Amino acid sequence: VTALSAAAASGMPPLKFVTGSCDNNVRIWERSEAGWTPTTLGEQDPPHKDWVRDVAWAPSTGISSNVIASCSEDRTVLIWTQAEPGGPWEPTRLREPFDAPVWRVSWSITGNLLAVSSGDHKVTLWKQALNGQWDQVSDVNDAGAQEGEAKQG
Image (cartoon, rainbow, N blue to C red):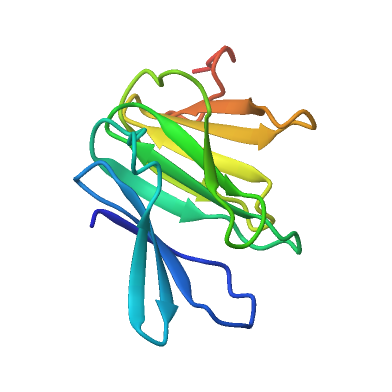
């Protein structure tokens, strides 16, 4: 296991968390009376082709869907959405591919903005548009300047 994120607490069981691992898989773990049961997302055709470096379960904002972000050494970020409890998890790629391996994903406290950090020293911010597509809304390099912004010195 290379990454771990707990599901947003809804106040009621079942308890859940998501893991990413060096076998390129993202798994949801759910607690029942029998113990912890894993479900591998995209099991028939794993969408990540290299180590999963991070996973992040989006905070619950009162909607019934579940949303998870995963990122990988293969330079991809996936947004996994479960529209209704017990339903299938559907992956959506942010873009194809990033310019470097993607190291971390993190949701804003409201769950509507996703920060992505990659091996090219950039942090990009993403937001879902009304049409369901994920759009990049900002790009910051490790010097703290937005891309395209004139550097002063």
